[in-house]
Image 1: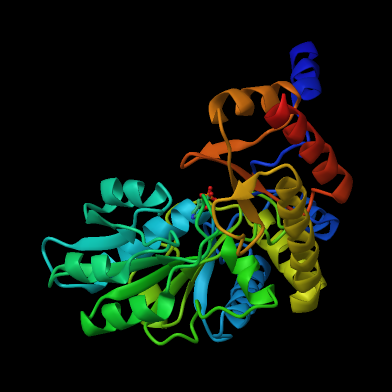
Image 2: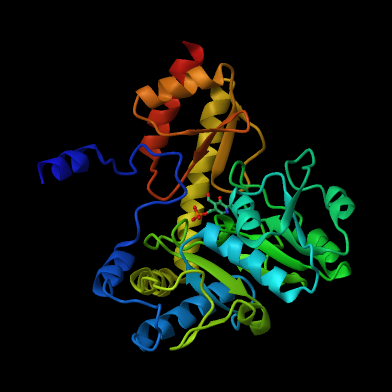
Length: 359
Ligand code: PLP
């Protein structure tokens, strides 16, 4: 008990955390989570209410993504969603030596997908804007390509790949197009500027969208959404009590209830307000940094900023020593302006960054 209390003391909140794609869940989500903490979706017949919650949550997610009649399930997060989408594309195809094409900027979950599913993962290079180079994708595609992957909000920079151009390549080659919007799925639909990235783009077959990131739900809650029921059904395994399309057997129902609760509570308007504030603070970061001669690698598309900085490793260590949690990625200092960050935190951080850059 003493040890547990000690650990609790060292367990930090998110207050100075600029490296995380997760945040404090909304209180409405926490309440629903606690209420359904005992539930298990491993056997949906035991908890039909939660199974209905899941269908409703997927329909709302589908609505945000241009297809309210979409199907899918609440996964453990973006990693499971990506692996399962790749698995579905492999099952649907008839090829014996399947490959998939992912951008060089893809999350490491696709490396895991290769290990789990046996598909070969081919990496396409990026263009000068750090989006996938569609010509490079075309050069890698062949008759054994079962899936093309586009990222809508890359982990390092928040870049949105050219999804319509990727969809064209996928359609021409009879391949699946999976969009990894694990982070961007709860940002892009609510930005002022519109980007084509979802089921409105013909050829997009599945999307990963994580409620436990910008969706303000509890961990673990990812979303895997398919436009066609047949693609989702490809994941079916018969159990003696039902048909399972998830990766795991036992699955917590609590975060499903939490996800539905926060989706219904905030609605599109609520998320638009969350994203508006995160973008205001993101732009403030860029303006403040410019005052002392520090600039981002690309103008931020979403609430992720990566700064080009001299003596990066040393600077990062000094920021960590001052209590900040930041990431060094692709030769830049990456910060994510999540809903737990407020203006005071940004100004404090910029003050420290300025001192260290000048110092
Ligand atoms: N996809 C993208 C674009 C991500 O940024 C991440 C996590 O950072 C993931 C997938 C994996 O998500 P999770 O950590 O929930 O498995």
